[in-house]
Length: 170
Image 1 (tube, one colour):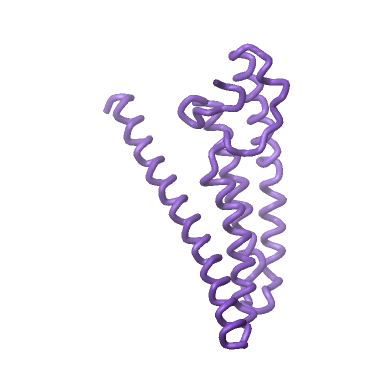
Image 2: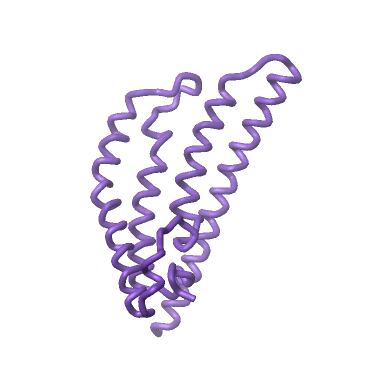
């Protein structure tokens, strides 16, 4: 198998994973939206509000935010302060971008054991209505942190294919 064949099959797999992540993000948003619609109907049509819809919407909101940030939003779409970097030549901009990604990846990598430990600790606490362990409610943050590390490393290794619209690039 040639290198280009391996790369194309890896790229195909990566696209499928990205599509699956986008689908899951959309499904999470649908759960958030539908739980709010059910709450409005129960509260204002039937005058019988349900606490489980509010809790489900809150949990779905947490998952939508962290899932979307880590898996669906391109790196170039994240907020960045770049009023100095664009003044440099393109090779220096790329190097500074890679340095920033490396620092970001290092911070999230450093935080991973603490996040995992805290989630393990929070497994003993449960949500008041749905009775879900808080460790599962916030488990998305561990997945998001790990994915941020992987996306930063991928953008450093292959800046043109990982995120073509790097900050500072025309």
